[in-house]
Length: 394
Image 1 (tube, one colour):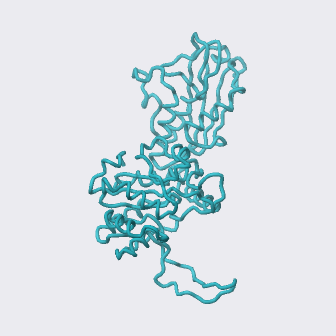
Image 2 (tube, rainbow, N blue to C red):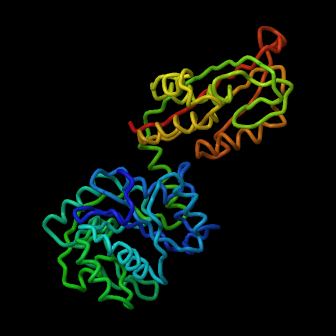
């Protein structure tokens, strides 16, 4: 999906409105659940990207609690989204605020989705959009399979016929003008979802069969379940290796794994000559069978002169994300006599984790010498080797 500002949305477009204004009190974490980590990325980011990737979704707008603006900005950094909308006192108020923010551009269709449903799949999104060709509203839902009991005072008071019963999910899709009018008319009420708002307005709501995996993250167990579901889908596990060397030249520091390290010399190279990040970039590209660092960033190209090697590593990580995968683990070994890596190891692992957007405990940096043998032993330069484990959809 190309980046589209809210003011440029055209009348034939379909906008995804992601509702992320809740505080997640039931979850009991230190921050709202939509900003918690899920397999290396915030829950909200995974939700947003699911819609950004869909070819029929022209724009994504997020409704947030302004009190958590810093968490929002960090979660969607680099996605170039329109300005988020401030939510209201209830979910219904938040959705109405989001719809009002879209009113000027008035897209043809809108998909309203819970931020805490990060496992939404492309096929369900597609089916909800398609249902709007023949209905003014559509609801992703799963038929009830379990026997239902009515309880009173801790005892079973009866069995409820489950025939025709469905469990509502999101996205819930609507023709924009219809749902905006319905929400305006329902202001002040406490309806449980947007389909209920549409029903109150007399709009027929189509049922679209969805998947059990599209569950809402409500408890810590749900977050664990979501992480396991993501891992099971990434069954193509690959390992890539990388190796790089740079000679010393006159200078006063070297850059290793994204960290400036004082030294009596510098490393000579077209970019910043960060031998650690170069080896790691090649390892990730190798796992993807996507060539090497030189094929993506030719040393003959003047735009890379003196460049921060973090740009190269971030590019390799973005290629993994673009293929629906994630980097599971990386390991870098610096080979040199000097400078000493140990005092800077923690900063190096933190910097790599920051660049790759992954937990620090999945990043390893270590160092060794060659017992004064070879060019590194003679102090002529530094070498690095790296390994990367990448998980891709099977």
